[in-house]
Image (tube, rainbow, N blue to C red; front, side, top):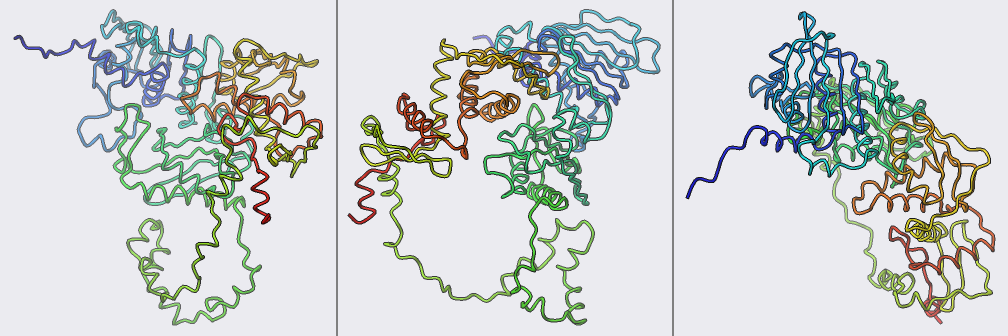
Length: 619
């Protein structure tokens, strides 16, 4: 038998490698923008056509490349940023592995133009399928221009897996924002299909955040700044009142490189604990600068996941920095010890602090670790703090354990009060002539043939609207009520791209919205059963809810939109309902195919059976 194992041709090997680095057009955008930053550019322009499928071009005024470097840049593992193995642990640049341009050239038609300041002529190179088609000198300004055309033209299977233009454009905008936010001193622009979407002049970090994420953040940011000998943390955190239902505006950068870290995100969330609702997420843009030797950034092809040498230290610093920032601006609640006169009677307050005690305290290592500059991360290892329990003698617990028979049986309660079997749903009927009672402007109590039920008005309305929208999406559009005075809505660029993708589905659900220039839309009509006059807030909240559902891959785009609209349009807790409204809501609920739960699986009502009520009263 002949030998079976053989070396792959370079062009095939490059295409396989490109699968890791260039997953979609936005992956190429990230790599090309990072190369432009590494070239020392002060102006970077990104031009895309057809959501990057036809063209991705990055033009910079950086250092440029010589003729030899321009040719070598497309070879695999050719880089100017690593010369020996130790350099891997001192990475300060964005790109470093030498795979980006080789991968791009393997799956697209590439044109490179570049010139250094000391050269009289620039270099033009044309590459297709990893093969150089043309190389010649040209007249060109100082800097580099790389144009990537017809992505995946030679891998049609990969091209077929690309999403719609609106979806791919959203990914490109996300990558652009991440790079532009990390370098506010550099001018960035993004032009799509001949229309300039972003024009970001150089400025401060706060200006860049506001330009990218929206003017509503102008007065809602808190400055975060903590410097130690181990690391520096700086950036901005949003005030609690602007917390959203989605993680959208959360950015972590380590040495100016955007990263994803659920661990560090938990540190920020813990700093906001009890300041925002449990299902809300704060906005933050935080930069961590530390020695590159303390991290490993080469653990993932996209370089967005990194490893820290000591994650616990980073966690503690991030949490403390955000807490300190919130407290500094009087956002966190403060403790007022004057409210508790008992504290004034404690020995530590009432007894004088004598000179002898001062000398004894100053001699302890605990005092030294707190007073030495930038030594907070060494407290645990240096001080005797770990022996604090020795100062408190153990005492017998005076709390008697609860008797078992005094604890109510939770399971029994749930089965009798909340548990509602599927076969009982059909038998449950509202009494026709009985009035409904609204409690706390949130719940509705209704008599039934089996006892009574407690209906959550928002949950019930959400189920009704969900089934109505599902029917509409299947070919029976909801009637549209045209506005007498059409409303103009201005959105942030990412939200505008998202809304443009949803317009066809929104039209089926009763909305008539038209694009009106850059990031601007005109609302010509809304669903007939929706109150008019607050369309802008409704659309913004709908987009936020859509992004909240967007992480759930089991839902289609239309399903996410339907759930978002059902939640948004449902009557909220706190609204008074007249008897006629409550009756209509209850009747519509029990006319639904599945009246007992919301689309997300929460109960719409709780049934209290008559026999259970009698047992509660001992009857």
